[in-house]
Image (cartoon, rainbow, N blue to C red; front, side, top):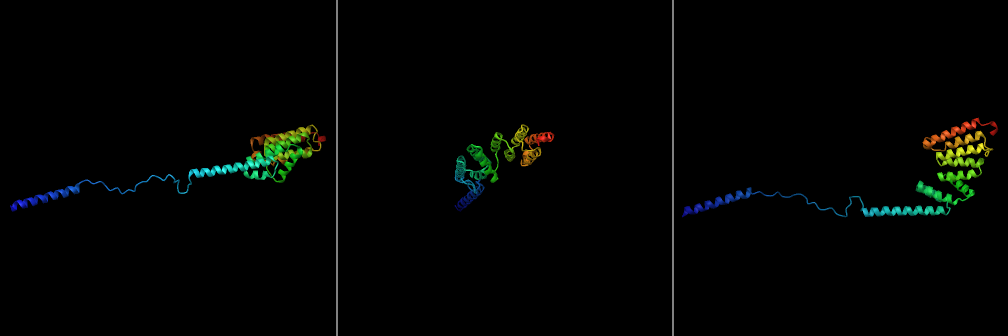
Amino acid sequence: MVSLFIAAVAIALVILFLAGIGFYLWPRSERDTSVPILPPNPDFYGLFAEAPSKTGGKVKELIAQRELAVAHLIDRARQGDRSVLTEARATSDAVYDRALGELLEQADSDAALLSLMSYIAQNDLPVSSALAQAVAASWRKSPDRGSTAKALHFAALSDDAAIYGETVEETMRFWREGKLPELSKGELRALFDGEFWILSARTRSSGAGFVLKRTLDSARRELETAPAIRQ
């Protein structure tokens, strides 16, 4: 009886021992220690960025304000307000040219054009190609010593080699035809050479500038060989 009890206890101990070993050797999944990744906040655009809708709205607002300001400047130019040129120049070259173009349309007489020319010269404002051409057109009607000097000067201020070259050629034609008797050969040459240096270095060295130099060389040779009575 005692031996059976001892045997039963021994079997129970063996079973417990085997169960402990099995539990220890049973495969266990590793513990997930990673930080869960959350989906990004749909309202987050970076540490320092603004929402695209807000940024785009500000840009559109600025563009609209600029267009309104430009439209106001052009409207003032249509009304003949010359002071708008200073503001237009501070905006951009394109806006300045538009404003000057509107003022040119308002200058419907030689007197009005001369007044606009004086305003631009007194305020040291840029001369556009359109203004230089308008001055040349007015000069052709009645060329004399003073208007010739102005036409050459404004052509040079436009920094357009082609316009300046055309004005030189027309001046020589008027001189040949005897329409500029008060201008001597020496005075003409001094005018041509002096106004040439008003052109920018970039324009003087351009392809059009090369053609202009040939035009001036031709004018110099003609003036040098012209009869002395023409002086």
